Image 1: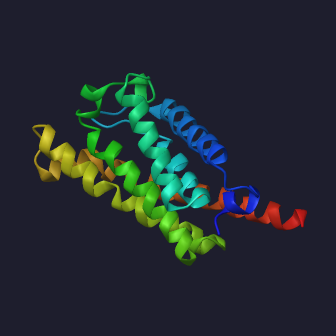
Image 2: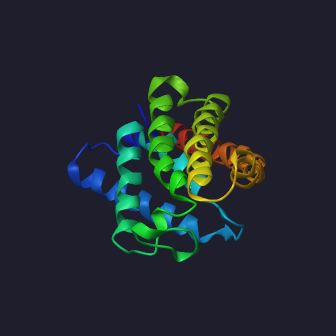
Image 3: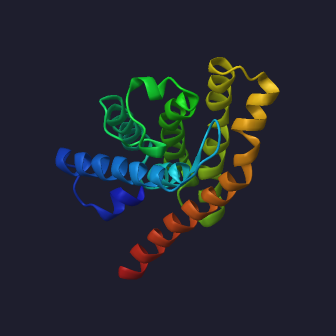
Length: 186
């Protein structure tokens, strides 16, 4: 059981739609909290995505990130720096954007498979997919820029490793706090 399933007694279509919209809004807002870096900015998106995966489960988290990408593709300024459109998605951050769906889904799947309770397990459920996000991110960066593989790793992974660990731990603490608050109400 995920945290949202425990909190929301209904499994209605409307409730799921509301969660998808709220989650995609959270990712869009977190994209605005950024440190401009070239060619990939540092933002709070992975924190938001980890939190969505930790609380929504695989399918709903994946659908939320697909909705986020669709919003950006049609021109809503939801990406880092207020970016939008298919052309933006094909730029240096495209691999990360596509990887966000897999990150959210895998985080949710890990929660559904037993990593959803207890802070250490929640950290693992957030950290493993966040780390795997570098695979499509760096590969795409390598493919669409003049950087060689080492340069793509240096620009698209190394500066983000420590922040990824911190954001995974923060997302896990928030999710653990949500479970604790739920237990204290019973």
